[in-house]
Image (cartoon, rainbow, N blue to C red; front, side):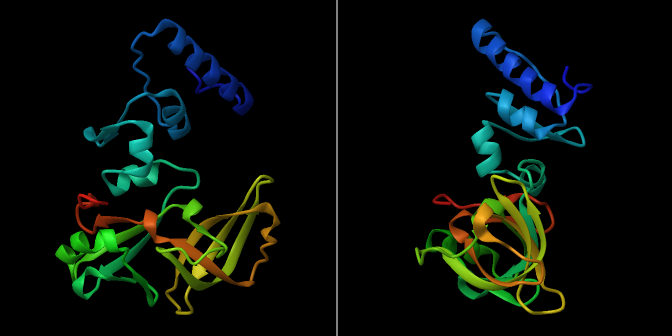
Length: 212
């Protein structure tokens, strides 16, 4: 019902549909390719890929506990950052493409130990990449370089190259508007690995343990 409306009217109509749903209390089946509509309107979301049900969950579950790389990449604006990586010895280290080594949080080690030597996909959302402000457990500081800046008023998106290798990984982070990012600037960034995601390199399914 919103596909032919301009951006402002779409936002207004989303609110009206949500109010109507709450007032009537009836079940509504709403089909959309717009992840914003799905996340804001739904109590439960079914994610389909090539006709197959990939995940049926709440909006919170879809966003924070995606069952597959496809789901993780579909939700969020900008979407989750991905990078190929390999699980190191004992499941305690992730070797990211471009020569970046990241420690695995303690609660994730047991599950990662089952995938030592395997090629997997590392995932981290932009809101978990920013300027270092604390030394809390799970916060990993790494040197980067700003490649692109997108000021949005309330926040600034920055495309950051991690590491100094020629094949260094590029990831988008969310920064405060007063961060004053500049293209070409060397910038230490903090990766909150407490929120990392791993996906099987072949199937794309999430790798997750009981405490993860």
